[in-house]
Amino acid sequence: MNSSAWDKFRKQQATEREQLQRLLSGIPGLLAKCRTTAPTEIELSALAATLQSFYNGVENIFKRVVVELDGESVRSNLRRRELLLRMKKPTAHHPALLSSELHDTLNEYLRFRHVFRNSYSFDLDWQKISSLVLRLEETFQKLENALDDFLK
Figure (tube, rainbow, N blue to C red):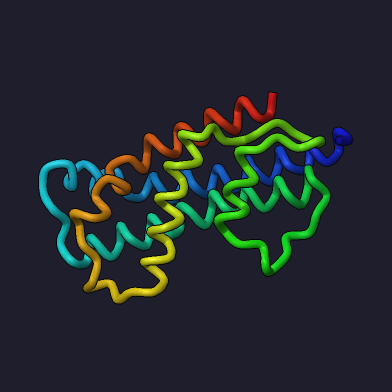
């Protein structure tokens, strides 16, 4: 793979990482509160929207891998699960981006994204999403570490 493709990918993923950091920087107080007290319905809706936005940003990075490094267009029929799965497999152009553990963790966020997009906010259950919310910062840090390793 040529260095200009990697340079372009580096810039794109850096921008996406900044957006993800901005997303998470808006909720530290709410995350701290949720460690001891269940969120209100409005807070739960905000957290659910944050989870969906988080996965959308992660997926944007994965799409850039496919386009910039693999030299493919992102087909509209490329399923989200397929895209995620591709990130734990090396190709001729790049190493694997995700470990099996990080893949499995991100798959939980992907599954929630589907629930969020197909449910009413009043149907959200804190008990079901609390682990995703409370691990959000940790998951982002693991993704950042994986991207740092990927870019070496």
